[in-house]
Every structure is written in structure tokens, then in C-alpha cells.
Image 1 (tube, rainbow, N blue to C red):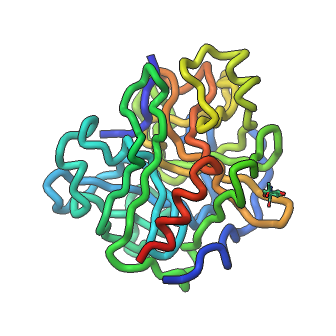
Image 2 (image 1 turned 90 degrees about the vertical axis):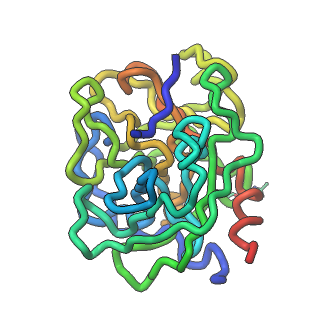
Length: 281
Ligand SMILES: *[C@@H]1O[C@H](CO)[C@@H](O)[C@H](O)[C@H]1NC(C)=O
């Protein structure tokens, strides 16, 4: 049984993927560590209230692709999974520039004007939640003059992959311990290796592994894994050009968040789909 990981005008690509230098990995993200404040300036917290009123609670991660557009997982905004209220943009907020789960007032609170789920997304674990990707159009643009807020790059083409390469990090406010149900106080980060689909399929019997899936880590004890609340959040890798690229969107894992790879939607496979919508008015 596979589990999804949610809890209840400017030209693109000019200044994407810039962030402060990353501390090396030593050893929610289970088995991650506290990130430095605002180390991941494209990381967003997707917050939800079925009645569209305060308080909006963290439900998923997301990322900022342009001042007007955020990327998340389709299952985070799926009325089939979350109830019909998940179809209503006014029931969501995106928080930019956050570090602590509890907001301090310095964050940007962004309203959503449109939910764009991939038309071939299917909410079915037995076929690996295909096309688990969605875009959220913002009602008003995020302020990129805020040093804590930036846009991330997306892969340059469908074969711009990072399998087997270093400097790939998962980030999120998901559970740090599944069995205790413990949420982190600040954004967690963990470095992980990206498996090719061949390596992943050989070691783990995921059903219907597709080119549009990205396996992340092997789930070894004590190593970082995505968990409930990380869904929709980014996996970003440092490219040789010094920019950070979003390689994956957190999609699903196994019960307990350890023992198998974390499964991400492979962003490179959706580049054209995303660019078409960034450029739409
Ligand atoms: C895809 O993008 C990568 C990174 O920019 C580049 O190295 C590669 O040549 C590109 N491939 C194609 C087919 O354009």
C-alpha cells in the first residue's frame, strides 16, 4: 500500500535558482535536520481551510516558479481525496518566506486565483498516482524584492536529469516522526541520492513506475525520507551553473516514511506543460 504525503508577466528563468550556500549534509523530512532560516527561498507552505476562513492550516508543500505561479502535487488540491472544498481556490493560502511552521508576521501570505491540476492525474495508489502535479495561480504576484523569497529553476528540457548526482535536497514541514505524528517547528532539509528508474525498479517493487516518477533515496534507516505534510514540496538540485533546479514534486511513499524510496513527480517530464502555463496571461 502506497501513501500520499499530505496532511489533512515577468519572463521566466531570468533569476531563478539563487540561494545562500548550502551547509554540507552530515547526519518534515523524517531524519532531516533544521534548515537555516530562509535557506530555501522558493519553498512555500500550502495552507487550507475548508470554509475559506482563518486559520488556514499547513497541508502540503509547494514551490514558487514565477511571481504568479506555484507548483504543488495534484493530490494536495484533489476534491476526490480531500473533499469538494479542495476545488475552491479561496480555501487555500500560500505562505512565502516562512521558516517556522508558526508564522511570525514577516511572511508573505498569498491568495490563489486558479487551481490547475494535470488533466491526466489519477488519484490511485495502485497505478502510482500518475501525473501528480498541479499549478496554483496567485491572485496577486509574490514580492521578489523580499530577500527571503525567490523563484526556483525548472529543468531545461525533458532529459535534464540529476540521477546519481550530488547536491540534491528534499525540504518540507512534513512529519519528522511518522509514528509519533511529530511535526517540525522549522523547515527541514535532507540530502538524498536520486535513483534511476532502472535501479529503483530493480530494488523496489513499485507498481507502474513511469518515466514521470523520480525515486529518491533507498529508505535506509536513519536517512532522510519524505513524510506526511511534505507532499507537493520540492526536491531541488544544484546544477554546475550554480543555480538550483526543481527536479521533483513530493508525491507518495510507504507507510512510516522509511524502508523504500520517497516518490516524486519528475518535473523535467512536465517542462512544456509548465512553461505553457507560466506564459499564459
Ligand atoms: C538539455 O539541457 C541540458 C542542461 O542545460 C543540456 O546539457 C542538454 O544538452 C540539453 N539537451 C537537449 C537535447 O537539448
